[in-house]
Length: 376
Image 1 (spheres, rainbow, N blue to C red):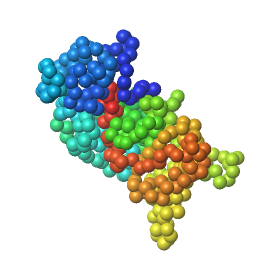
Image 2: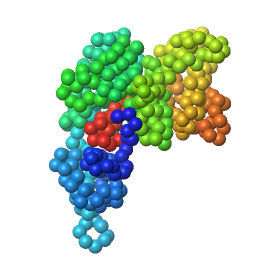
Image 3: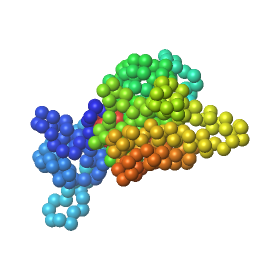
Image 4: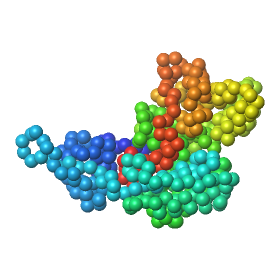
């Protein structure tokens, strides 16, 4: 999760970094391909067979890799022995703190399959009370694990630095909260904490249908986004890359209008605000589609310059399907097409994630895999 680090290693590196990098290279190949021989890994990675044999022996001793038996080769000679990740050896705890009404979490295997889950109502909890609920949830999930826990991944709203300190999460009343340290001391397990939208990007990259450079917009209690460019997450100099929720998009009063939080993107798109507007329209007997279209237009206004600057190939939305999918996402695409250069930016794909409500939980598993094993 280091800034600028490619998520999936693909080539050899300098000798001083070689063993750790090459170990990740072998694990990445096995994680994605599975049931391959030592010779297959050597061909895929460009590493020598001697290096592969040495690394595989160490990984088998650690219990991370298993031999599956011989492959029935048509070629003469000794049949190759197939290898795979030991996919039952460890489990991962994933926690999602981004929803506006509950804290959610799950026990997952290394392929992102949810084995058990739990949630705690957030109600109006803030500050220390919210932190206590996180610890309670983690305790429950650790107790549900049926194999050694590889690590705990947590997706939190707000600005989070690389050491897992939540610098600011106003909706939860957190400021400079050392969440990674607190949970680590509670559980004595490796813990990784990151912004929820960045974690969601990891899920889309690892388990979704992401194709190239992308931006994922996470709509929940607030609005944030994660950026994946050139195979690496973008964090920004102050770890606030993707914080588009406080960008002012209510510019109807002209370019000279002063900054106004009530005209920022979250005022139209944050789930509590959007649900309230939809409910008000329904009570008044008015159609709700115009409310959703306006929110989509405001999001399109915020996204168009980002797509233009980075030439992104796709934007993925994550949040309540009943709000985002339909008039809202249609308005996003239309606004972007109207505000970007045809033929270069206007054909960017705008779609909903296929991972649904579990996207942050599953992204937390990718974060742990990347941090502990160097795979994704």
